[in-house]
Amino acid sequence: MPPSQRVVITGASSGIGAALARHYARRGAVLGLIARRAAALEQLAASLSTPCALYPVDVRDSVELLAAGRDFIDQHGCPDIVIANAGISVGTLTEYAGDLAVVSEVLDVNVLGITRTFQPFIACMRERGQGALAGIASVAGYRGLPGGGAYCASKAAAIAYLESLRVELRRSGISVTTVSPGYVATPMTHDNPYRMPFLMNADEAAEKIAALIRRGKGYAVIPWQMALIATALRVMPNWLYDRLLVDAPRKPRRQD
Image 1 (cartoon, rainbow, N blue to C red):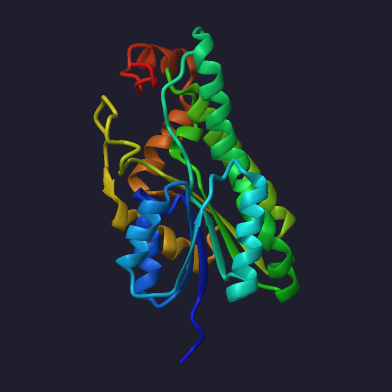
Image 2 (image 1 turned 45 degrees about the vertical axis):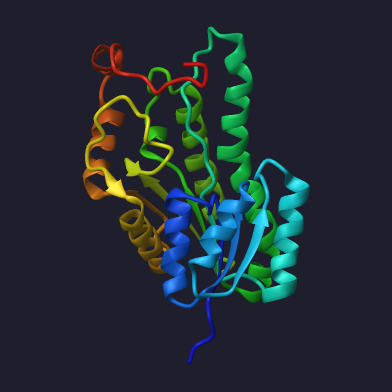
């Protein structure tokens, strides 16, 4: 029997992260699950019939995240797959001074959280000559949406960062996969006040993400229908894009 895969996932307590944990648990993987909510992690781990190392850590905490990475390596060895999934989505408006801290938080979690997640594991993967890193971006990174400036900017930055990393590691044996999902039914999208075309459930999204990682795909949008929409929006002239989106419903701010 081949050895069990070792998979580390951030944002593992709910949504896509929990669905990814269930996916890899069904395949007998040893899991390192990272999220802020200890109780939710423990509840998830109790439902999985596979070894789980739990780390109730915020991806904004570089010291604790590094310690979690070192502990997983010490206990289970270098992971085969690391998935930077942790993210937050909230509406922001620059005119409100109170939203500046929210913008900073979104960028910190959604961009710097990816770099903090990967950093502890790249050296051992490079030494071994193999490994897979995957970052969860979004089609929201293709164009700026009104009321979603922080989230869209964070996902655009994540896409660019992951592309840079993919090229940096090209000859190392480490693959880097960027996945830009469309709409996925999770707590993050539950309060969206607009229609969400091609809405996927979290388990369906996890299956697609895992398949992309397994194939070593560099970049993909899921589902494929959203790739067509995202591409159309990207090439749309500004005057038309502005006219179509100016009155679009906006994601609620925390104060709303």
